[in-house]
Amino acid sequence: MVVLPPGTILQLMYLRERLRSLPAGVFVEIGPGAGEITRLLLELGWRGRAFELSASTVEHLQRRFATEVADGRLVIEHGSYFDAQGHGEADLVISCMVLEHFADADQAAFMAAAAHHLRPGGLMVGIVPGSPEHWGVEDDIAGHQRRYTRSSLRALTKASGWSVAHVAGLTYPVSNWLLPLSNLLVGKQERSKLRLPQSERTEQSGMRDVVFKTRFPLVLALLLNKVTMWPLHALQKLFAGSANALVLYFEALPPAASQPTQGERAWTPS
Image: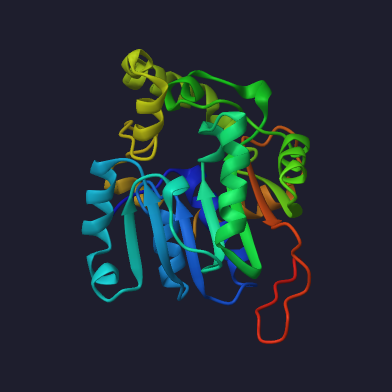
C-alpha cells in the first residue's frame, strides 16, 4: 500500500470525474512517473502505451503493471515520446507535469506529435504547474522551464492549432497552505540535485523520494485517502477559477477537430 500526497489525491479525484464523460478507449501517456494516472486509466477500462525516459522508472512500472503488460492492455516504452511511431491510434493523449520541462520549440513539437497520434474526436488532457508567482526551489530541482497561467496555456494551444475545451485550477487552497512546508522539505532533502544537468533533473522528477512530501508513513493512510479528502476535493472545485492555483488541468482538441464522421467517437466538453 502506498500513501499518496494530498495534492496527488485531489488531482486524481478530479481526473476520475472528468474521464467518466469519456468512453474508455486507447490512451497514450507521456511521463507516467510512479504510474498513478496509468492505474486510474486501466481501472476505468482503458488500454494503451506509456512513454518514460528513466530506465529505473520503466523497471518500476513493469513490476507494478506486470499483469496488464502480460495481457496486452499496457505497453511501456523506454524512450522519448518524440520518437514514437504510430498515427491516429489514440483516443486520449495524457500527460501530468511534463509540458513545463520543454523548451518553447519542444512544446510545439509535443503538441504536433499529440495531434499526429489522436484519432478524430480524440482529446488531450494535461496537468501542469500553475501560478508563476509561486515559483520555488521545487521548480528548479525538478528542471522546470516555466509555470503556466490560463492565458499562456491558451496561447500555446492556439499557436499549435489546438482549442482549449476546459481549464480548471486544482489543489487550491490546500497546496498553497502546504507550500512553505513543501519548499522546506524539498530544499532540505533534494537540494543536491541542483548540481545535476537540467536533463537529468527532468528525468528524475517522475519518481521522487521526499519524506512527508512524496513518501508518507502508512498510518497516514487514515487521513490521506479519497474519503477523508472529499471535502477538500469539493473545495478545489469551488475555487477552480483561482489564479493562485498551483496546478492547472486542461483538456484540448487537436487542429481541425471537427465533428467525427459516422462511426468515429465523439466527445463533448462539459
